[in-house]
Length: 322
Image (tube, rainbow, N blue to C red):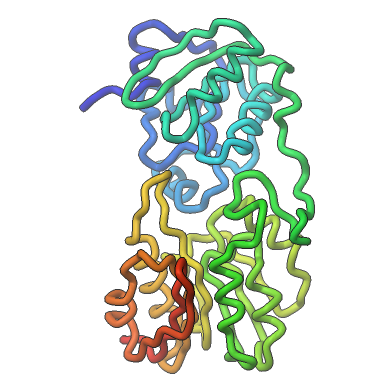
């Protein structure tokens, strides 16, 4: 098996780790930490599936970055979040290591860091780059500002889906919801809570569970939704174990990194069928090019297309298979 960039840099002597604690920020569950001294590593994560995977592997896991000697920034897709992670690493560690794929923007991050700091040690490998430097206050202005309301009137922050505008698919789903909804509702993959207010405004709704894997998004949802009928759950929606719901709404994710992966949407459909009562109802929006019809008919007895446009399609499914 090919060595990772981190392992290569350490084992080839390009990078030497000082003594002290090592914080690895937002690594995927498959990120290679084998070259790190295990007893000094803490994983820092806000995405529940990865958080749970590292915890199951026996690593200490935290949502907030602790003080550490070394902070390893595993570059996420979102540029603003990546920069905020570098700023946080500089504020809480002595040595900062940045590791990421070219498709996630590591090269632009490297150029920005080099512009401020001059030449930096680096290694390119496996369609990505790793580089490192002594912590500095040069990137203090990259720090993420507190969550704030955007032009759309909702609180969002860097790193959450559709942080700058209401997602067009979610808006279309709202328009397709009936005037009356079932009593006990859930939103799987609730994001920063856009669907909550429209769902709660429908007749009949007595409770709504917002289930979201990204802690940054769920924190925004808590700020956006103030209703005693709502409960917030930081969890993997595809594995969530909750009481049976009468109705569910979903706008499922369909990307792993930058790659489209319809299996994520299929997992959300299967989870919805599992979580609904025998007479439960599902409302779902999906990108038009994604092939979810077969998954819906496998999981529900009745499936109807109730709306859509050139980009999205809206489904209503009832009577989940048991």
